[in-house]
Image 1 (cartoon, rainbow, N blue to C red):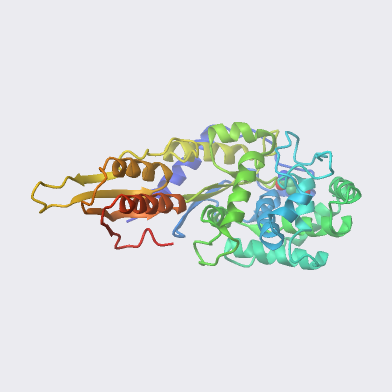
Image 2: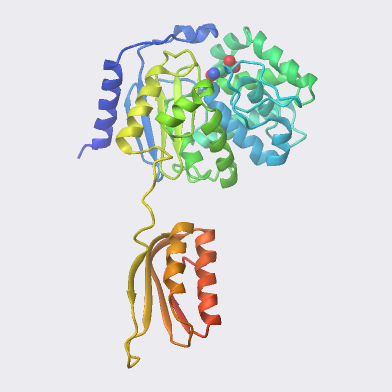
Length: 404
Ligand code: GLN
């Protein structure tokens, strides 16, 4: 059987093409101006590493600003949150991607704009890393996110480096404020190489899914960065990833995302999907017109908006068995589903109704699929309190969902 998902992606592309061809290809990096503006592709990666793609999925392009969240992830993993926050903030700038956005203390406002990304590049690798070592770390790290060895497009690199006066100015400014660890020229060299790594939409989807899967690449199985890093990166992508259009994007599409001037967009829905799109015509914010359109469509068709109210915990109680008078049947509370705060709270309320005394109780967790830390804590505490009240509690937990 041919997958309906692939056909669906093809239909999304066609409908986005029908909606027009507005936007302009970026020309400030001369080499980018040479691209065919009609190229259009989309890919989607699931949590188990299945990748679907449609359109010009074989076409390769430079990653540009979509590299920023991943370099930020590597800096966080290598140096820790505190050290990175000392150098780069996490506030949306409300400015264009190449603006001088510094806080009063000299910190770039966030790692998703150029000034913050140049600073972040220099924070990768161990604290004593040379500029070359940081760049090597970024290439190796981004390759791990993609699950294959990525290469620098030397022509795009040379083209951007020859015209990067503005990025040089930004680097000198942060250096003067004591926030840039490397010499400005070295940092811009490394950052430009980072932006010139060559990817396709499948790579973007896998990279986005790796962030959405707590740092574990779903294709290779490699844990690229720790889960806490992904939470931090996705948060900053949600507020700053689409530059000046971040608010519009969040309300329409509702996924942490990042765009690049080459025309790519990547989006990560935690625990669910990674998306990559490519179409070179950009809107006035520097985001791909058709890429944004495709993501809007995917989000609304597939219900991917992060802020959409999830299924509420209304079916936590699978069943409650009341004891009979001659003591043949024990009181049983049977739970089901995922035990997070809201679900465990429903369960605790049921346990609260049990009168004090020494009647035996069975807590049946055999239909509970998983529990997070707070869900485990709450259920264990419920059991502890029942025992304190005098009950003998038997917990049926065949899958060990209450174990750490
Ligand atoms: N390399 C580009 C630059 O520094 C990246 C910008 C972007 O993709 N928005 O200008």
